[in-house]
Image (cartoon, rainbow, N blue to C red; front, side):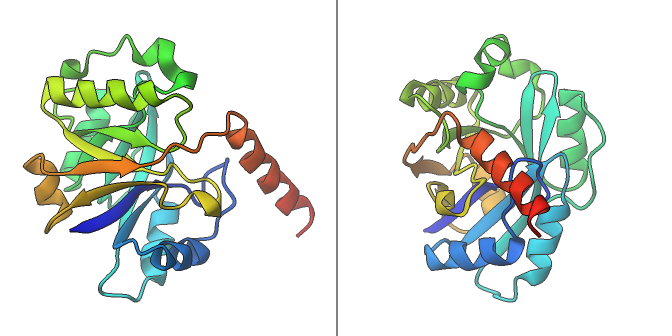
Length: 215
């Protein structure tokens, strides 16, 4: 079985200050078999991390977390930036690039009012649901994501949503063989623990602000 953290933010996200080089080092130290770098609305972090990775036994997936009117959609195995913001068109663009699309933390506290109005069957072509996000504040947020994945027969995926180094690996996806095939066949499992800090986003953004001042 392989274990991937499929939701990590690097310095190319406005709310993180993590370097691709150190992300790689920590992920391998924590016995992960692969990671996806999914910066907000850009693949720059994924591109750099993949370029730095020299380990043939460790996979780096180029991804992005795209903001849309129904929340955020994670795109994996991307080759170029996605400029589209309409959710259905975002999914189509991800597929066009040979990747798969997953709705991120669909019931997370910060987005609950918006996400509870989303009918996932309207997101045509959606491949999976992030059923474990380690930054969720309440356990039921992940529980309802599992219910949604079962209802719509979508793959279950997990990630840490790491913005700081100590968070890497706290959420993960387990599967056998090739990840794309596992997602297509709905043979993935999500796991990890919740270690929420309601102010974590603010902390990571503040640390990035300080790093720019004290270079």
